[in-house]
Length: 407
View (cartoon, rainbow, N blue to C red):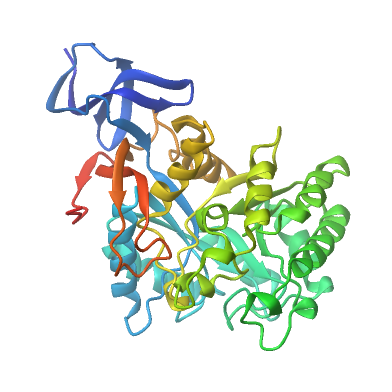
């Protein structure tokens, strides 16, 4: 009889076919079989989670890595630890803010070297700026960039200068030829106030105007674009209409936009650092409606972790999202689709995002019924809140990782 390295059982395994009782057999870092819950499988280690759910590890798009006052390698180490505590097994690092910004192959190599000490898998987005050439794009992709990111304003980073329409079209044309995805921060610089810090200086119309520019460019070029992040719910109709005119546009949002209305923020809340800003409770409810609409183009949800702006969200995002989703009658399959499967498919990350034979054994034990109290002194926007859903044991490529979690 075949002997596996390990077997993890749960009565709630989230597979592409649904949430089922199953045994997940792992060998050499990959899932070799998903069998019946009671199947007799020989393994050196067997873990039975009981009713605790088993999720595919989350894939977090656009994770900010740079921690002020820390070196690059230390920043990746800290982000890896936070990711594990939040059920994230793969971070897709934002190109900026960072030193150096990932705008050329040399900078990407520096990040790849620094990330070798991270406890989770790390992929990278290439940054597109006014000085980016077609050769830079090709070199970044050859060096391992899984997609590209640009901004129509500051994008929360001085290293990502606003793109002109001409450069946006030129970049899209280059990326279309290589079938790469372009993630776009769509707030239009011309619609932002000065200084563009408060919510009043970053109105929803800035997102609308930017989306109009992106749709116009993509319609001509045919590029795949992903709005990242999407927050202004009154732009949902514009996002939905893009498909009807042949524009392959999808969108990404974050749990704090779905969970935290601007009216409820304390003056000292780190959530004031969000770019775009948190919006009204009415917008939050409308954003949920857009997310849950049939055929919604809002396909991915990620933490929006950005330490350089005081946003430490990786650790709590999965629990916060589940808390709000469960209240709306949604299930674990929805949670896994938004945070794991759809991000992996968007970026073409083979082997990530599913609990299925042939995929990486990136697994998360998630106690979906257990309450968890965020400490009042926590640096996240969720400080002091009562959430539902606790991340427990985490396996990265089949190996159980030490989360350092004593909650």
